[in-house]
Length: 285
Length: 126
Image (tube, rainbow over all chains, first blue to last red; front, side, top):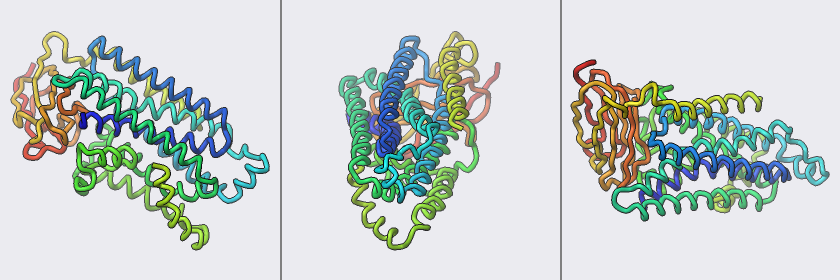
């Protein structure tokens, strides 16, 4: 049961995390109508993936893995762009925004950006959904213990959805100013992980074939087959044995973005930010 | 900008769906003439660690025999992935198909202890 639980959790988290962040962001902006579209988009994506998964099973075809990885890469890169956009937007508007919102001038977020974020939630589910649907069916098809394997996978996905929901609720409950400050750092790590994962899937799609040597060994931290590895890989994009290109992508994104998030405002703020960040992370997860 | 992104995503998505529906004509190896090779994932890694196969369309039928830390079976040409079965947890099975040309390839089961990497030798030609 545990092996399928771990995979279900990881696959589910990769989608639930992005949806949770997007939903929390939109709700912080008071974009209720957009939020409804997010839920509708997620439901539609789940429906499409389930249909495709069952259809593939019926005609006993494999999911074309190269195209699947290509899709994951493209959506992953767009997600990096979307999360980066949120980080920059929060940084710019963080201070004045509460006043603006209270004054009813909340439409600081352009309409196009809202549509983009709603689309992002939809594609985040599509991205992981096909693979997850195929995996779920395979789990119920297991040779020895199909019920146990299948329910393990289902529970894993359910826990991932709960964590995504927790991120959404947590993001909603901390007050706006703190939300912007605290989430900046977490979002940088998430986006760096997404970029690193995109380098991983780009290799599996046949797009990147260089720099595949092992950069470092994180198996002590991301021990394969454990719940901890599912959480770290699903949320922060950490691989047990990152390749050179994966590590490069991570560092090249994380360092300048962390500097950007932490630097320009006064050091007093930076200090407070650090002391609150751990607290909010616990809330968020 | 959002429109361009949406268009790009839709293009990839539809190519995925097309590939899923139409792969029978092009590179589906499971049809007549295709061979099926049974391989296993174990705690040690890929089993058998050395495969000798004739060239041609081949379907790899991957089964996980009790390995909790290894869930993936790949066939690589150098650093390039030719085919893979992912998320094959203990007790599960998965398949992938590819057309093998003569040469030496690597099988890769990330996380395996003694045979994380194996050899796939493909001989003959059609």
